[in-house]
Image (cartoon, rainbow, N blue to C red; front, side):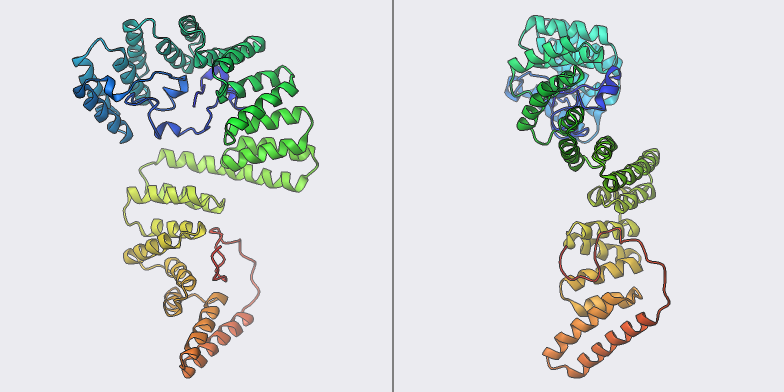
Length: 470
């Protein structure tokens, strides 16, 4: 992933001109940009780092320190990583790579002054390394220091005219200044240097779109998506180009794919709503409006959770809100966060069991129900566990849990009916008759209940009247 995220391009970033190929803001946590580099994708690979460092290029004692540093970064212990790399620098103080690596960790810590000092030391030690100039240029660009960044990109390209990442980054700077001819020229050179460079294809498409070259822009974005059909902002740009071409069905299709890939980003929904309105599909546009409003609420509750990150209740509230929006995977993650703060929290366990159930992971749901009930017997956990027993045709256990939950509905009547069938086939006629009568009594009582306002759909997406897996 080679991306750009600096203040001068914020408006353009809304259209995705500079996002990386996998379009994941958290991708930096997955892997280092280069082996033993410490850098996250958000820093090293974002700059288009092309260095080819391998573990065997370091002495054994240095390699051990760098491995310790990498493990520390993965564990979120950046200070320990800085200490390990500093020890390596103390052993080999003339190795530019080590300063680059320590600068990466300083970036993760938000210590920009130290990061810049280390990147500059790396360049002093290896002044003809184009990658180092490009990387520092990206760092400076991401901090809004455009003039200094441009000098680094120019120097990287002077040292290596086919440096695709530096060409791409310089093109993005031209985009920020609305200098579309210069931007297109640099993106074209980046593509010529590496014709699989998805960001450069995407960025040239964006520049061509801004220049009203819609057919050429669409050709570029098609190539981007051939290279990576999960590139979210490329799908968004495809939709924007189609909007300029007044091809609203194609725009809706492209924005829908972006929504599918990144369902919690309101930008794609807003663009799709506009396309739906242009196509006079008003009911669907209203649905997108409702979803956008829900996402605004999610942002508020997310901000609250961030302010109270050490509170399990804050993450439970956010998880429940996500359940309402049928974002069950994200909800399960929040309930897990709550449990990391407060192990064996009965409400978090019960809520996560509902999320697992909605996702069809009934084994995990059963384990969480059991754990929740061991802490605090609760009606919701008993009720859900009863539904899970029903899926396993364990009618005795299901009925026992329904009774513990004081539950009284059609699902409970169905449990008695199905147990009656089992008992009758086993020759337990009296017991089967009793179960059948109990099912009838429940249904008669339900018919006699006064009319009540219809309830909202179960936020788990789980149909309690069905014994079939969703």
